[in-house]
Image 1 (spheres, rainbow, N blue to C red):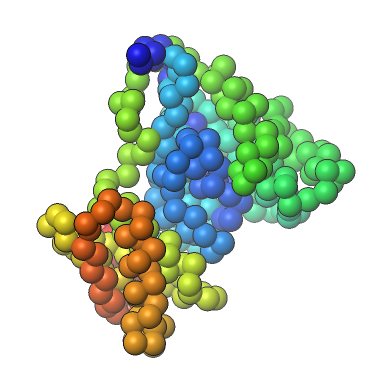
Image 2 (image 1 turned 30 degrees about the vertical axis):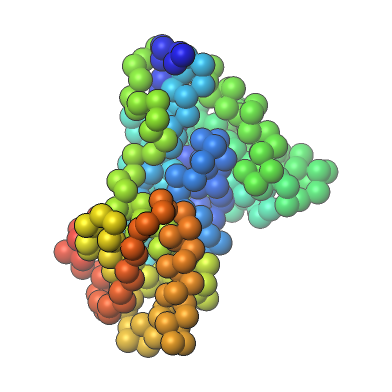
Amino acid sequence: MTTEIKRSGFVTLVGRPNVGKSTLVNKIVGTKVSIVSNKPQTTRRQIRGVLNQGDTQLVFIDTPGIHKPKSPLGERLNSAASDSIGGVDVVCLVLDASSMIGSGDKFIAAKAPKDAIVILNKCDRIAPEKILAQLTAASELGFEELFPVSATTGKGIDELVNHLLALMPEGPQFYPDDMVSDLPDAVWVAELVREQLNHRMREELPHSIATRVTEWEWPRIRVEILVERESQKGMVIGKKGAILKEVGTAVRSQLVDGVFLELIVNVDKNWQSTPEALERLDL
C-alpha cells in the first residue's frame, strides 16, 4: 500500500567540481541517477533524483560543479548550477572534507541563501580528528547547519535525510512512485556511454567528449561520440576498436537484455564553443 504524499520539496546540491554531489544523490536515492567519475565537470546538466519516504517526497537536484569557465560550455554549466539555487526549498552547499576550503567554496557560499545547509562530504577520507577542524573551517562560511557525511560509506546520510524531511512544507507529489529520475531514457544511455569513456580516458580528453543518441529504434540504439580533434578519435576507438568494445559491453550490462548498442565516433572541433552544437547536445 502506497503512503499518500502530504509534504514535498526540492533540494538542490551545489559545490565545486568533484566534491561528490552526484555520488551523494545516488546514495540518498538508493539507485544510480547521475553518472560519476573522478573527472571534473562530469555532471553537465541539472538532474533530479526522487526519494519517497513516509508521507514526504524529496526531489534532489544534482548540478554541475561551479568553476572558472574557459568555454561557452563551461559558462552554461555554471548557469545550470546557479539557476538551481533559486525557487527551491533547501540549498545544500557540498564541500570536500579531504581538501582545504578555498576561494571557490567561498565564491559559491556567497551565492547561497543564509539558511543553506553545509554538507561536508568525503569524511571517510580523513582522520576523525581532522573532521572537527574541517567543520570549524566550514562554520566560518556563516551557515548554521553542518552535516559531516560520506557518500561512499553512507555514514551520516540518515541524519541528513531526516533533517531534510523535517524541513519540507506541505505539498503535492511531483513525481510518481516508480520514478527516481527525470532524465529521458535516450539522454541516460548517452550519459552511460560518456561515463564509461571517462573511466578509460586520461588527462583532459574527457572534457573534449560529448555523447548523444542519434537513433532509437528499439532495440537498436545508436550513440554518437563527439571529440574535438582527429587524434582524439583514435584514442576513443582504441587499438582495433578495443576501447569502444569495452565501453559498449559495460553500458549494455546496465541496460535491459536484448539491446543492440552501436557506438560511432565523429570529430566536431567546435562543439564546446558553438551555441548550435550545445543546443543539439541539449547542454
